[in-house]
Image 1 (cartoon, helix red, strand yellow):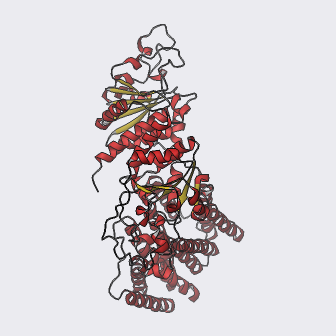
Image 2: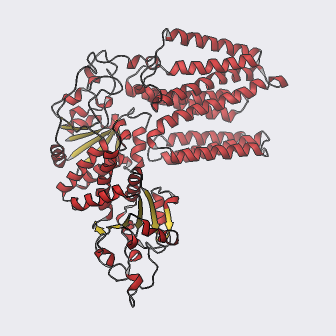
Image 3: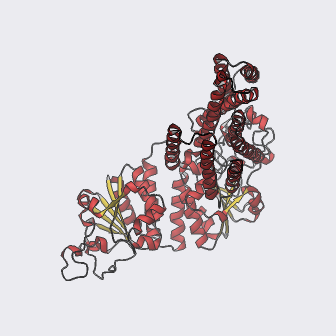
Length: 640
């Protein structure tokens, strides 16, 4: 069993190692999770609990809850979700400690185990409450500014001393009152420990709490004399501590200053007192600069996450790269609200890993770069960090975006970032400001870039008419076909579906049994981009509903929606069951052309008065349509 424990610990360590790189992160996550599962089963076997049905039920329930939140949690909410997971780790260790402490009555618990359990209870409790505060700050349910009470450090010191005293008491003579007092003090200390930390320092705080959760687990392992729990907790604790150090270096922060809230209390003397005008630019001039550029670096930040503009960033990368431009993405180690936040968002939309560069890899390249495009980043590109002594940001390593020939800033406004220090980049002569919602700004930029590049551009009047119909639609059906597969447009289909649902529309996808080149072809393609199975409907499930559909959108389908199958006797298609798209109130056709399908029978749907044709490559067509629909979504969103 010891050998199995060692293998599980090694697998967990290997999983963490793999998770340090975007290319192997998925493999690392699966390896670590599998190792933990094997470890749980190994402990059940070692303790003779394999037949304990209630433990298996708990395992299944916990796994189901984790799977549900893992699949449904929005990426933008991942920082607070990670903070909650840290808290649950601390809570688990605290519960183990409670079992050990209250098991003293049987007389089988050693003094060493009681010491370890008391310490695990203290560390686990403060990890739980501290993580809850961190999650509250990250989700804006609590103020993101530092909260410093009168004589705050005195209260922290007194609480810590009281915790140590109670730890000694519970270790020597366990009583219910002493244990409950230790729980209360631990929870209070976690709150006092976390509330003075500002939102800008949350990446460091999450890393530190992650370390605490591992430490609590290792100590709890000592209390139950289980080497595997000790090893796994130690690995997590060490990894969290290393990550904390990396984050501190990335922000040029002193950990003690972060924990006392001193890093966010200072700002430039006039910060927030005067307006930063900068050089507002026209979209046309920014597009002109990009069209002439041979090298571009994109710098994403938390504003990209808020705007959910990562898809537009991906499209900008693809479009510029298709024109022969060298495009790279610069990732600051503390961009966002948790370590790796930007990497996760960009991986979500399949930005190639080899385009992502860390600060130390790319910083020397800015001086030779034609254009830098900043998308929702502020403090991490603020040149004040180099010269504004006495401010919270001074000395923090930044991305040297200001050294590029041109800088285009796609931020919501010119207000200071979380550090509270005015961004002097906005007033640099080489900086152009395109202020507003990043997604809307990038959509407009992409449209003009396509027009200039000669990319297949659709008639804006037809696009506007289609977008208008979709804006008023309450019931939409999308019909994919082989053309979607050829154009690899399934990601755009998913995006269109999500945009329409955000507008309050019911969206379903109709799957013909012979759409594509094999049974289930469309299902496989849509599953590849995580379209929910509940959105897919077979012909017999949905055909009677088309007469009530406001808009049907055809994406690369032909024969399977050809009404000639109903009345063109003597043709190859006559009598074939089709999807009754022609019964919809409006039909939008995103096919490459109007040529017949494989049956060779012309499709009269193309000549129907209620049909709007968006011809060309389906992926390009849907991208342009999605830009129009996205603008509708933005215009209908409530003002902040």
